[in-house]
Every structure is written in structure tokens, then in C-alpha cells.
Image (cartoon, rainbow, N blue to C red; front, side):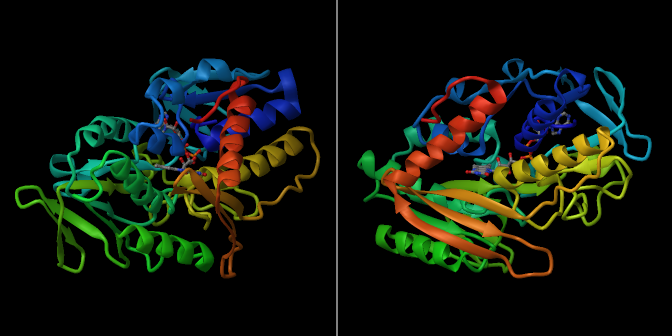
Length: 376
Ligand SMILES: Cc1cc2nc3c(=O)[nH]c(=O)nc-3n(C[C@H](O)[C@H](O)[C@H](O)COP(=O)(O)OP(=O)(O)OC[C@H]3O[C@@H](n4cnc5c(N)ncnc54)[C@H](O)[C@@H]3O)c2cc1C
């Protein structure tokens, strides 16, 4: 099992539940612990501290699972052989859940003149930057598609509004949100309409269909793919996403991502599955989709190991929670089925849904790490 993120944690947990001690699962990740994506925003806006959102893999030990902290350096999918800086591993079944890597250097000027908030390091560093920010023009900008958790830039703009308001700095500030999409959440017109209304009420500028190509730090302007420009005092960027280089070098990718059977999560290589952000399965890159794909892959792997017919199929359903500010959260359930237009069901922001989001995080922490946890 390569990668101990949303996909890898759910897959090993589900397989361990089904197979118990008879499982011989090796879970490999370079990191020593996991951070939920939404926790990055919580730390960035000072709602919690980095130590409180780090889940150590040492706590994730399940029957039949061995965690190895190592860098995966080569994958041979035909031989199901993996090289790491802790040795070579041969697998009967190989699952690739290595996620998407961030590449801030791909956007000229972003590292020197802006900040990214999609890695834990970037978001945690922004905590101090925002705390010291005296006010001015803030641009939240996206540099490429696809990008993880499409609602996250909208959530960032709304949480930033609350953050600056609480510190008496909103009047001296402007917030602009720039995205290469026509709507904040294209599969859900209702969610998009609610977000656009919230932006309007709060004076947040919305700039659709524009992609940030580069920053010019000397002039403090963002330059868009269409050649137009926008001034900023503080730039919060979503960097270019790519498969990890070890996946790119593995011959598993087509057009930059790993293709899989959308119902079974199998790759073109026998006995090799891929789940989550690393794939081009057709769902957004978000933890809830990775998790549900992992559950299906686990069922199918367990069935084959028991010499039974594998029947579980992926349904493309995911429930996303959207921070609207004012301690309210909305929910959108989206369904992606290959060959059909995606559909979405939207529940308006409320304090009750904020509680449901907290319960979502707590339940995963309990399931994967066996301990109680409150996200904020
Ligand atoms: C700001 C923000 C907010 C978000 N909010 C939400 C949300 O509210 N809900 C939601 O569902 N999703 C959210 N997401 C998206 C979510 O975090 C990801 O989509 C999800 O983590 C993807 O799961 P995954 O298992 O595919 O990959 P990941 O969780 O990224 O896991 C991949 C793992 O592979 C490891 N790895 C990579 N390369 C190597 C290598 N060469 N060697 C060893 N290990 C390696 C990494 O260390 C990592 O642990 C958010 C993301 C961001 C950035």
C-alpha cells in the first residue's frame, strides 16, 4: 500500500477489518503522520495549532498492517515491485495512493512573491503571515486545473473575511478570488449560487475563468493566462498539481494521471489498483472520494484473497463540507458517473452542519488512529 493519506488509511483499515491478523499489509509513506486537508485552513486562520492536527502513523497500527516510513523511489507495476530508501518490496497486490504533489516552482514568482496554502508547511507558515498582516489587497488565486478540494479557495476567501473582520482590518482590505472555473463549484449550481451570494454580501470580488500564470513580485501583480493583471499586497495561491515524480516515472500515467477502471479502481496492470488524487478516475480530487474508492478497492482485494467473486463497485458519490464563515458550514453531495453529467444536492450553511463536519473528522480519526479527536 503506497501512501497513507485519505485513501491509504481507509484501504488498510478496511482490509485489516476484513482479514485481521491473516493480512500481510505493508503501508509505506514518507511522512510520520497525517493531516486532514481542512485542518490546513484551521491552522492558517489561527483556529488551532499544528501539533493538534498531526495524527501520528504510530497510532494507526491495525492487525495485519505494518507501517514503514520510507520514500518510494521506484515502482515497477508489471512486476508489482517497489523500491524505497528502506529496501525493496514485492507485492501480490499493489495499491498506489500517493496523492498529488504540489509544484509551486512551476508558477514563476509564486515562491518569491506569494504564499501557497495547499501543503501543510505552506498553510502552517501562513498562520504567522496572516497574524502580522495589517490589511491591504489579498488575492486568492488558482494556478492550474485539476486542483484538490475545489471548494477550498472559496472557503479561504470567506474565512479570510471573518479573520480580517475580527481583527478590525477588513475595512482597510480587499479580497479577490480568482479561479479558472466558470462557477465556484461547477457540479452544483445551488452551491455555486449560495457561494456567489455570500461573496456579494461580504464584498469579496469573484473573478471566474481566469488562471494565474505568474506573479511579478517587484510590481506586486498577478499575471493571468489571458495576459491581464491584478495587483496584490498578499497573494494566497493554489499551486500546480502533479502526480509524484515516482509515479510519473513508472509508466502508469496517461496525460499526467493514473487511469483506472472507474468501477473497480484497477489499473491497466494486473493486481495493481490506484485510488484517490493520483488517478484520473473522473471525480474531484478530494479526500471523501479517495476514501470511498479505497473502500471499494479493499472489498475487491479481500474478495480475491478469499477466492470469492469481487462484486463491490465504485459509485462516484462524495459529500463535501463547505466553510461559509460565521461558524456555519454547508454540505454538497455530488455524484460523478462516467459518461453522465455530474449531479449535486446542496444543503444551506448552518451551525448544525458545522457540527456534522466536526463529527466527520472525529469519526475518521477514531477509525484510523483509534483515538478521540476534535478538529477545532
Ligand atoms: C486546503 C485543503 C482543504 C481540503 N479540504 C478537504 C475537505 O474538506 N474534504 C475532503 O474530502 N478533502 C479535502 N481536501 C483534499 C484532500 O486533502 C485530498 O484530496 C486527499 O488527501 C487525497 O487523498 P489521497 O489518499 O489520494 O492522497 P493524500 O492524502 O495526499 O496522501 C498521499 C500520501 O502519499 C505520500 N507520498 C507521496 N509521494 C510519496 C513518495 N514518493 N514516497 C512516500 N510517500 C509518498 C504523502 O506523504 C501522503 O501521505 C483538502 C485539501 C486542501 C489542500
